[in-house]
Length: 306
Image (cartoon, rainbow, N blue to C red):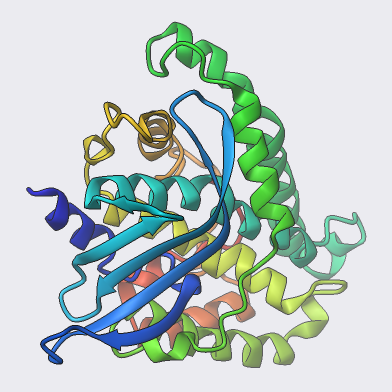
């Protein structure tokens, strides 16, 4: 598979859609281009130092989902380099926003057990897993370096700097995202299911005291599907070129995240899907979502557990 083909697979559900800015036409006027802009873009250079670019821009052919061009400030990028930057941004600066916002969609107070024990358990699990992700992940890097999974000198502080940068940058304003509905199964699903989620949440709000609906949507539906898309879209971690002279350090940690932190955690002793939850809110949302796209609906989690 060529690099451009692998990029096509990665973007087939229009990865990083929240950064869609505008559409344009190719010179032949027959193909539509989707323009992604990432302002104030954090990354790790080949010396493992955290850097911030003013702009990372990517053009994707919306019809073929193939790479057209990419630039990091004044640097023209290849498809392979762009792939590394998109993946690293997802795992280090974008996905962490979902974890952070999810904290407002929880209620772990012991009194909640009486009203909604399922919510209480989901809240405890999410809180614990958010702690694992933010406070302990970087602590494994020294061991990974000793095992040869990371090259010598991979600085955990560089990772933390990019994570914190992503959280503090907040969420890119994305009112024009509906323009992508016709080009992306995923965007189409999320736009429709978000409306369903809030409609059902209003009906069952007494089950969710102190919970912010938007935050809960992000911490359940969006978070779990972000993991699913990472798993499905980057089929092979070797697509990330660790020998890249500019961005190889990011490819190294990107491979580790892909193989160790993306898929479902096995052997759980509790239920964590909307499907089959036995709770009227989650079951109602699932039933309606499955009519739109069953594959996506089947992978919606009720808590953060990966």
